[in-house]
Length: 103
Image 1 (cartoon, rainbow, N blue to C red):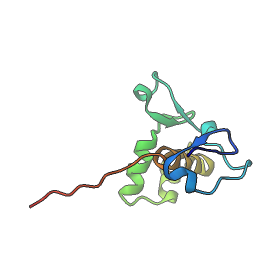
Image 2 (image 1 turned 30 degrees about the horizontal axis):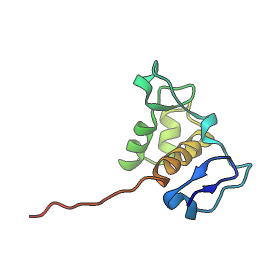
Image 3 (image 1 turned 60 degrees about the vertical axis):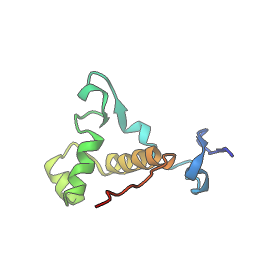
Image 4 (image 1 turned 45 degrees about the horizontal axis):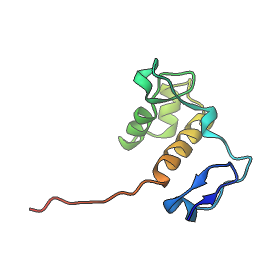
């Protein structure tokens, strides 16, 4: 079953069970770009060379939002929120199969 989200995006998989966001919600596409000329096309924060992957790794290493903003003043709170929206959308339709190594 495919549901049509208000933004015109067709939602499948688990995304169809997630609530639709209001129309005035921050649009990650205004903040995240992928240009082959910048970091070989990795998704980055628009106007920077800060990749989404890099910011996620900082957070995974325990950096706080405040530490990130202090060290990378070109990053705005809206851009960080947009990055999370981008990651959420990327993961919403993915299926993961968790396997564990047998000892």
